[in-house]
Image 1: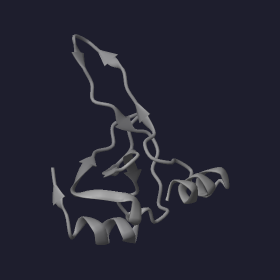
Image 2: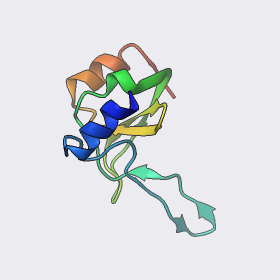
Image 3: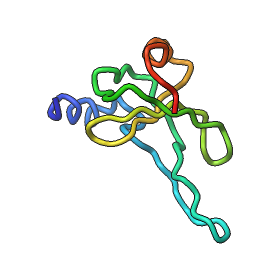
Length: 93
C-alpha cells in the first residue's frame, strides 16, 4: 500500500498528499493546524476510522473535509463525490 501511495505522490497525481497543514501561534493560545490545500483524488481506500472533521475557510485555511489515515490526516475537497459518499457513512466530530 505504501509503495502504491509513494508512486502516486512521485508521479505528481496528488497536489496535496496527506496534510497540507499550516500552524502557528496567534496571541496567548495555540491555533489548531489547518489545511491550506486539498485533494480531490479518490483516497477513500486510505481512510481509517468512522469519523471526519469539517474545516471552514479562513485565510490561509481552505474549506476541507479532514479524514484520518494510517499516515496522518488527509485534507480533501468537500465537493468531490467520493468525499460526499464517504462522509454520508461516517460521523462528524
